[in-house]
Image (cartoon, rainbow, N blue to C red; front, side, top):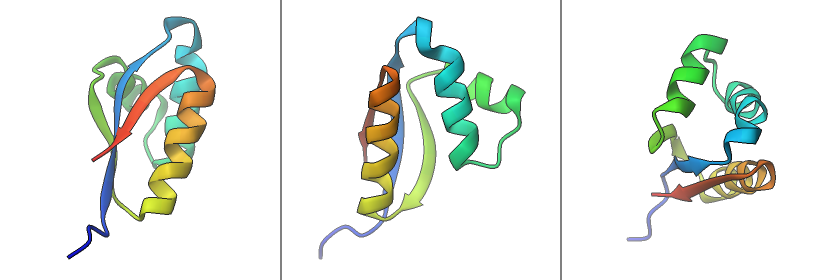
Length: 73
């Protein structure tokens, strides 16, 4: 059976892009500023679970463009 549900994990990020990455994390989660900041700061961390492959790929591409390393699990 092919996997249909994916998690996006933030592995690391460029410290100079931290604020942009926190804003992006907030845009695709319903976390508040403090929760999003805490999540980003504890990388590696799962950002969002149960996504389709397309959703996960889009999220990873956006994070990469901002200077983060994210993977699909």
